[in-house]
Image (cartoon, rainbow, N blue to C red; front, side, top):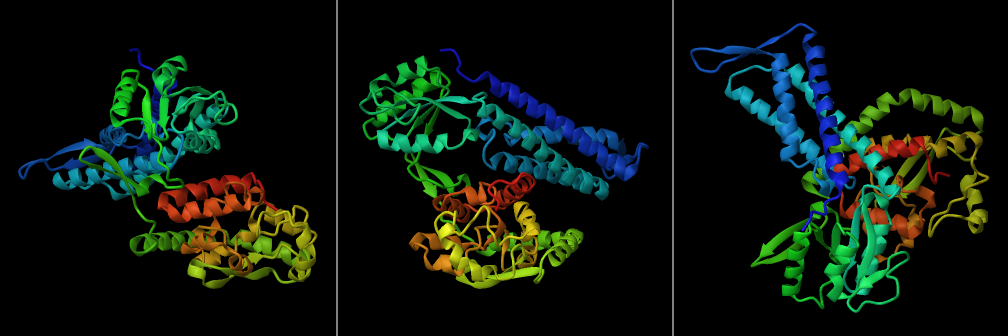
Length: 479
């Protein structure tokens, strides 16, 4: 049977490889020039107790570049399973980079060679930064292609109707996953569409015929109650002949990859789910990350702080800062600091404006809030009013990334499971910040915050911070 692999995969992978190689060469060349200048520098290597030989840093840089490229391949950083979505691609690039320099350190120690520390301290972070930036640029291009229904996987959904409908809606909520659903197969077949624009094309007896007719790249099995284990095994063999990927969709939702582990037991591929934990080393890592970056931000952004403070002070009467009680980690209250963006008696006017609220659920929001000053409107649009919250982060009351800090009045009205938002420290930014802000429904805001709490990782924090920069420059839903 002819292979059914999409042609764009290999082209995209080759583009990634070429970009990686160019960026690695730039990193090692820059490290060599910055550390030693243009002149050739030799590195002594002691091969035995009786003798040694030397190589120049240009040769070392070329060997390092080739080893780095090999490591990126070994860690499967250009595997189609991580194209375009999630943090796994970035995590693999980082792991491959650290493994490369770790191996370099081991070899240097074994050969009793003193590689310039300045060379390593420049090449490693610069190279990692360039590689991650390169992947981000290619991912942005890929997402644009997928939005135009290019560079995708033709996908067939197979399973019981209600479960398949849920999976289909989840997939269709974002074009970035690259899955283009071309049809569905249900237990009995039906003339009714599964969801809008997705037709049911067959029952279970016609699965392979549907795969061939629709030129499917990926088959998603959402349930198998009416399919025997033998039938599923045969289906897997038939898909293998056609080079069609078989994906089994679990009923669990909003569970990130790092919490999912496969546990094969006597031939059964059981799935183990870790419970979310925010304690011990994980909490220490997040706090250290917050403390370092907030310290840097408070110093680096001090001119911006001064400028905004002067604008607020001379544009309207009242204090520069606005302090408001919010609920933090585990329900502990704290005073959140912001640059004042409203008139002084804004809180007193809130009651009479409640009926005009355009916010979702418990949130009060107005696009044209009369309490907002002219300078305040500009500050809120670009989130500049939130800069003082770096002080809250430095004090440990908030985090750089986390759930939205709620008001005590909101927490009083929380449903039972909504309180899980308080299991992580509130953040200056978060998934809610980079996903529409005030344009989100209350349910979506809660879902995003709960997803963050359930699936926190340092990598996800870094990605959200990068997305926040884009959101601040091109604000959406900020008022």
